[in-house]
Image 1 (cartoon, rainbow, N blue to C red):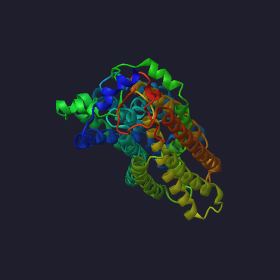
Image 2: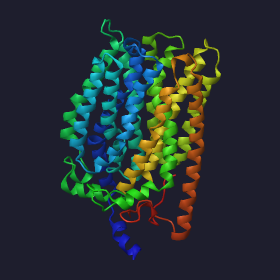
Image 3: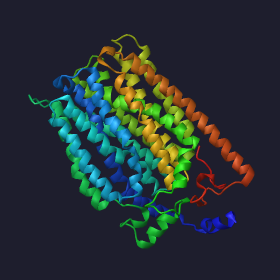
Image 4: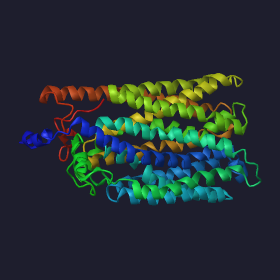
Length: 471
């Protein structure tokens, strides 16, 4: 009976030419808008590290403990409001995201007008609330448009926008900090980098598609085909939460392994954004030079995110890729910890490069990996919510372990970074082998499955006998 209910689905075949045409339309009309939003969001949240090096902490008279609270203000609200990922299922994306753009852009700009710790904390609180609604939901949003094997490249490119944003932030900071003013160049940093987000809101409202079935840039027949081409078929309403799927996501061990990996990755993700300019400056460089020197490692990390996406799309083996890049990051942190000669800036700066180039691709592929293996939209949303909320908590740790008293080597923060990246290696390899065993077990019991077959996940989710995990 179950097999009979799935046969009509497997018989609905979309030709390769039509697949390619629709995919290119999504790449042209959906992906660039979401990627631009991602750059803007990380530009507005990550410039706090550049502002610190440009003199914000000193101008506001804050000590290391108070600055930690400034950083944590964002993460506390971000974690508390990441449940708003579910709102992507309820509100039209073009309206929801356009409103968020205006709100978080305004919060970012207001940071440039504060005169005390309370004002800056309030601005970071609002920034965390509004960015939480977008940041965690963006990868989920792309999963509504692309097939499982297409998703890796696109989500990795999307997540690769974060180091690209940090690259832009560092380059902009290098230019803006040349502004000679008694008002403080760090104020211009917040204001100038917040304006583009507000300007981009109308673009989102008028051009962002809500779903494949309602995309205005597709012919009505292509809209139907765009839904049918998805390899996993979920017949539950897009504007509602399927609670059985949702609770299945809360009890799936995979989601907690991915969350642990994300926790470890996010420690460095947040720590590097907040303190990398300071770490480089304490190698003996001026504030302005340090801003410039942080841009190249971020750009290299972006290129590696894209390279990792192409590799994982072609060969699979997401676990090996995550573990491999985490190993690179661990070597980078070890260089920062073990090179004790403070005059050996070459090896220490190499450590910065390796840490950046290892962590960002590992984080991107891990999130893609989770999205690939969740059956159904609601389960995917639940898994992403767990990852985003719990995984984000490591940001609180990274905010507190790079105080001024640890300068210039920051042994505690870098040692924790080495330990967390080593843990990523073990978790990624363990999950890879576990999923491989599960696929082989299903092949033995139910027989092999055509990779192009569409599978109905409306009821059983990824427990459908024909569902195979990407490893």
